Length: 101
Image (cartoon, rainbow, N blue to C red; front, top):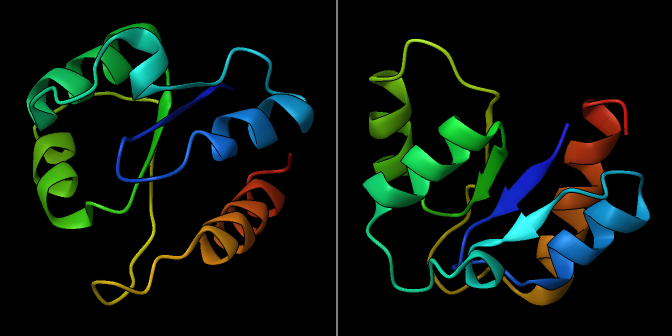
């Protein structure tokens, strides 16, 4: 399993994933996708076998519904303005624990 962290979240999450045993994990900025449209990020995640991690739940859920098969989507749902770096870390730790990492 490998994770692709969306640009609305910190690159620190990709580093955390690598430390937790997912060395192929990345951040959209590291792949040259900063500012890319959501459909382009989805295409890259699906084609390259990433589990996409995002705070942009509404847009990506719609895009992922169109995919016949994908490796997964981890969506953090919080009210706008509440996604601190500490909360990102806590939520991602929980997601990794649930996914067996």
